[in-house]
Image (cartoon, rainbow, N blue to C red):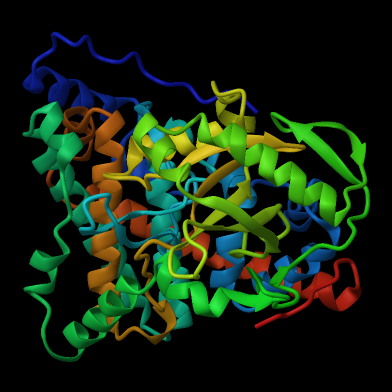
Length: 477
């Protein structure tokens, strides 16, 4: 497979008009209509084999939960199938413009969270696959997820087509606006949820306000009664098997660094507790001085394993409890999550960061308007990144949305993605390539419909593999 080729970036002295024109010229090499094509290659890798490959470094006893969650619907399958779609996207046309991309920009990887100023922002919120790459890959993964989710919600084919077109229009409009801004203005650009809520009426406004209210309580203090308990006079994290557990004894696991196996180790619960404490000490060095000082006011209390997400199931993840006082009124929960090599590296080259936790953190800082103040990275047997477990985070339940709510949400996701791309890309060049008509949007809608068909076939292949006993699945929800 040939390496992805990017165009030479414009000199910093180029005017906005020159950059716009250069982007427009890229259409001669890669027509916008070319993005509509999708057909599985004759030698397309077996999707189940790709999933099996991605499981090699995961906790073995959790892999059935991953398959179980992916088996629930084509949409949950798509969420966990980043490795499959990366393989497919590697053979699709690109304009050649390179910037930091999410790598997994499906509909469930957006949401609201608090900025350090405690303002509720809306943005991309998952960066496990982030890497510099083609912006079209994020667009196509988002668009495919719109059609797959729309079909799951029983919207018509025309509704789903229009939802994609309208979302890409939103991306184009946002990028055109960003192209007119100065670099600092792009960097500080904020999606004002209050302004968005001002155009939402009736039941839809009530539903969003409810989510906003719940987010205000999604803090360490707010979730403390649910996640912690007193045992023998001391606070500890509650066990909720199999999703949250204190590990008594682990089977030998392959330790890794930079995605490469380094041998095997058996880790006891006490070992794990001490290793996480040591890793967190190293993690604090990756924080800005002010945040490091703040973290020093808390003492480490407990740590437990936690199962998260769909595609992430099986990667090592812990939740750690810290407390600043002795009376249980000042807790802090940090999530410590394994960061493996991005699925995109096979096609885009290795990350510039030696630690994949750092790759995730730096990608998030580049793409998000404002990131968690405790976002950092470390290493213990595997590369890890650390963030607050919950900090006024909220997400939508896509399955219960009305069609109108769904259309509004997909446009909001596209707006956030445009902002994220513009921070490290050249919005004038992207806007020049996109133009102001619907040629690109209609092409992406065609791709999304064809790839939704492919996702349904791949999901059926997973169900068949489960039925035949090729893979073991455990549904935990």
